[in-house]
Image (cartoon, rainbow, N blue to C red; front, top):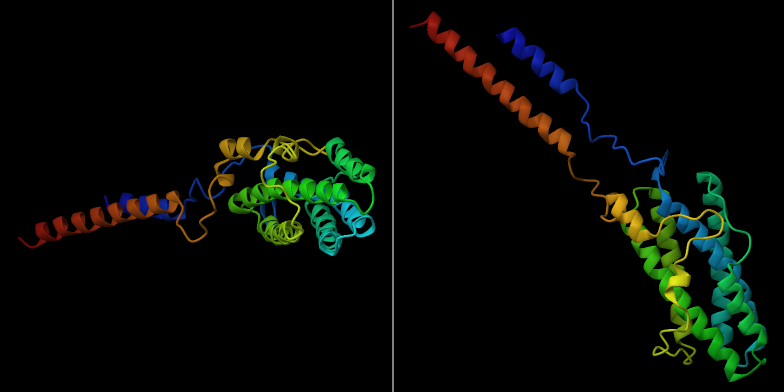
Length: 254
C-alpha cells in the first residue's frame, strides 16, 4: 500500500497542470512577449492607419488655419504620430505584422473635406477639430479594450503609449473651442472601428467572446487551477500515508 501511495504522489507532483499552456486557437501565435492574437495585430494596423491621415491633417492645420490653437493641435498631431509611426513599424517588424500603406476610403474622405474647406476659415477649423476629435474618441475606446485584455507585454506597453498620445491629441483638439460635442454623427464610430485593409480581423467584442483573455485582465499573481488541484491531491495522498502508517504502528504495538 505504501509503495502505491509513494508512486501516486511522485506522479502527481511531476505532472504539468493542464491549464499551464492553454490552447488559444489558430489565430494566436506564441512570441517571447506572450501570445499574440487578432486584437494585437488589429491594434498595430489601426494605429498605422491613423498616422496615414492624422499626420497630413496636422500639417494642414498648420498651413490652412489662422487659429493659434488649431495650429498648436496640428503640431501635436505631427509630433505624436511621428513617434507612434516609428514605434509601430519597429514592433510590427518584430511581431511579423503587415501594416497598411495608405489611408482607408473614409479617412481619405476626411482629408478631402479639409482640403476643400477654404484656408483660414471657420469652416476649416470646424472640420479639422470635429473630424479628428471624433476619430480619437473612438480609437481611445479600442486602445483601452486591447490594453486591458492582452497577455502580450509588448502590445500592452505599446497600447499604453498610444493611449497617452491619443489623450494628448484629444485635449489639444478640445482646447480649440470649436469641437461640437452635440454632433454625434461627425464621424460614425462604426467606420472608426472597421478592420484595417491590410489584414481584416474580428472586432474587439467578437474577439473578447471567443477568447476570454481579451475580456479580462491577466492576473499574473494568481495560481492556475491545475496547480491548486495538484495541491489538494497531494494533501489527500499525504493523509492516506499517515493513516496507513498509524494503522501499521497499532498492529505492531497493541
